[in-house]
Length: 450
Ligand SMILES: [Zn+2]
Image (tube, helix red, strand yellow):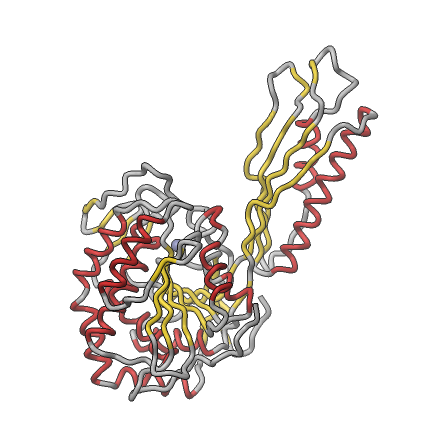
């Protein structure tokens, strides 16, 4: 990460835990602590925190805590594996409608989408949490209470985010708080694993007028994710004629030997530390029996980077290594019968929201108001999509202490979790502005063309 004069660089690895189909997805993103914010950002949050109407709204968030935890339990207990989010989506939609967004609907991709309109002519801010979990159908999702914590797969990642969106909607409506900008409230599909951000990709395909995005994910207080690690994943299949290990020896290439050559070459690929760029052959398989020259072999490769250019460069080297390996194996036996084909099975665009943009400063200033130091971080999340489009996007926490993401032992401690829900709501309100209190900070963008 290039040094930025206005930030102190600190070698802290992030604390945000989501996405991309791996447990505790963490990147080595270097975090920087913003030291100052624009005067207009400071002014907006001073106005918000000093307004009696906003204090009343924040009291309502606290008062709504127990009800929000009931929503959390209810939604957690509806399983939502990748590509099977529909039941949870329907339940989330029903709550959204009951809380005042009668026009909310499920889009063609499966996302729940509701628009809470502002006074007009303000920015449109997407606020979202993802419906899907990493857990397969049949997982025990019953919420269990133990030692002051709630345990259940998916409860913090990201069902807490969903329940906080509903709580915000309720308190905004109950207290008749009129934002200037529009809030596009979304519970989206396809964040985890091979969902490949399909929900978020559809949202940005269908809504060309979104000016910014604030996503909720389990994260420590003060965390502001502004870096979206991109990833490409491949499934590579090697195919040859195969044959008897003794009888056909010398006449046919081996799919497994060819793949072994490829893995050896891939293992030697060099990548930069900054921006952090990584790769691994994650799984291998193939072959028929111990005494068969293998007719087939396959492997899955994961390539990641905090920036797209080194990601694509690494991908190019790996794909070239596979071609070279096939050529060498064919040459070894003087044949042309081994081939390899690859399929892109994971495609997450990457990008970043610069740390000196208004959206990051807004979250920073809101964190300060709640007594938290801001930690900038990165991971692969729904925010990758807007970041890759150049649209300002951040992911922040929704309150509560959380852990065990992507494991059956996932948990949340909701003690005082309302404080995090207040903090993140204030971040959002500063961005869209509140009628009679503060002007919107988020800039309106020229609508994108399809
Ligand atoms: Zn998540």
